Structures are given as C-alpha cells and as structure tokens.
Length: 250
Image (cartoon, rainbow, N blue to C red; front, side, top):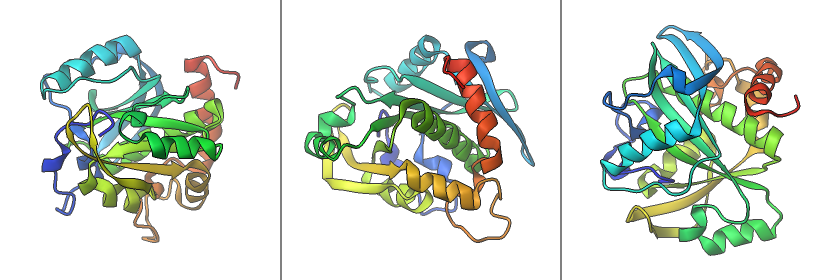
C-alpha cells in the first residue's frame, strides 16, 4: 500500500521478479530525464540502470495522475523521491517520508506507530512504490532500496523503515528484505483495501549489505534481495552523491 494501488491482483507465488510488489508504471506517463538529477548508474547484462533524484513537484504531479487513474488519491508528498531509469525509460520509483510525529501509516495503525515511538525508534516511511514489470526487477528494486536506506540512516538518523503492504505481499517483504509485521491486518483508509504494517531495522540491513552486497548472488548463498544491493565499498561514494544532491554535509 503506502500509496500502492490494486496490488491484490498480483500473484507473488508466480515465477516472476520481486518488482511485482509494486504498482505498475505504464508508458503513458511522460517522465523525462530533465525532471531529475543523476545519482548513480549500474551496468548490467540488461543494459544500464540509472538512479536519479526526481524533482518533487514534477514527480508528485505525475504520480498523482497515475494513481488518480486507478481511483486513488496520494497522501502528502514524499520528502525524497528516487527513480530508476533503464534504457532511458523510468521503470521504478520509491519515496521516503521523514517522521515528524505523523506519517501516513498513523491513519490505519495509530497504536502500533505510537508503540514504536514510545520505544524511541527513529522512523521514516517508504511510499509511492511503483515499477514497470518488464524492467530488470531485482537490480532496480535493490538499487532504490539501498539509496533510500542510506539516505534515511545517515542523513535523517533513522533506525527503522515502516511500510503498509497488502497482506498478500507480507511474505515477499519478509522473505526478500526481512521486514517484520506489526499488529493485525487493518483496512487502509485512503485505499479502501486490507493492509499490514511492517518495519525494517536499518542496522540489520547494514549487516546484510556487508555480507552480501554487490555479489549478485553468484555463490547462491542468499535468497534475499541483499546480494543485488551495491557493494559496501560503494557506499561512501553513494553518500557523497546524496549529500551533493540534497545539500547535506558529506
């Protein structure tokens, strides 16, 4: 969920990539490269994947049109929106919202969110997940998640990411990234569909990147998404790029 739409018709058990956990982007959305700033590229057997920072107003307007076509309205803007381009076409987006005492997840899961804050957890929220199912899904998804978690952890001091997902996709997020569920299934108020609240420890994510990041799972040791993240040696340069784009001290 988290501004996802109609995920209930996606069958994750089918032989397909993890990108299916995202809302689809279709070719009628005219994202252009001039609406974004380059962060990093990855050369793969599928071609070059380029991760860019999307300019908020442009990305917001376009995403609002996309979700409106499905009968949904986006909640407040993301604080950071990342996009992945493949062969010059935008194939995936991921947004981050910083916790200022209220996130979209508070609407459907107020008790669970309050409990996290009482424990002193520093939170942020993943939102605006969208992807083209024809793209190279694992590398795209892993690249976006890695940039997002680096930004949240190093520049916002975040300890846990939260996300609302359709119950059918709980297994995907748990299996691929070790997101943990909180509380019972609820009705997502803005979407009108069932939702589950999940969180990911960024400290745990860091240990998994240290073990598997950049390996592309060539040894077959991991069934998660972490081998498709960037390598640990890439992180200082990724942090520098994020600092340059968003105006932080490197």
